[in-house]
Image (cartoon, rainbow, N blue to C red):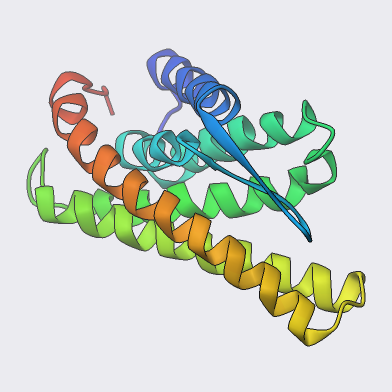
Length: 181
């Protein structure tokens, strides 16, 4: 196992804070008849955490930063454990894809890692929404699918924007940030 250096720990803290800040303050809440969802830029930093810090460290930064957002917002408070898992998975997948690269800045791997990380998140998030509405809340299939479809639209828009921004920002960040492993 690779050593957790002070430098990596500082970057993990930084990305945890960036995920929280860009989830909290750079968002557009969207109220629906079945609940609330939102468009935000936190996912950009979840992807960047995975790409720069690797699957586990990046996953922890993404998961903790997103879970902190949920814990400090009464609307999302109960979602914190599921959010930790889904955001961890997003950064973990992006980090796993990118860690097996040929060169320091491998643009195709950045984009593929970002895309697969976002797909992982969207599938887990919509799956959680379906299970919660259908089996926990006991809503009809029609009501459940209405919310899943509405959240899918917001999530996919969020995903595309996050992939584009993260892929662009990752290039200079990967050149600037060097870890002593």
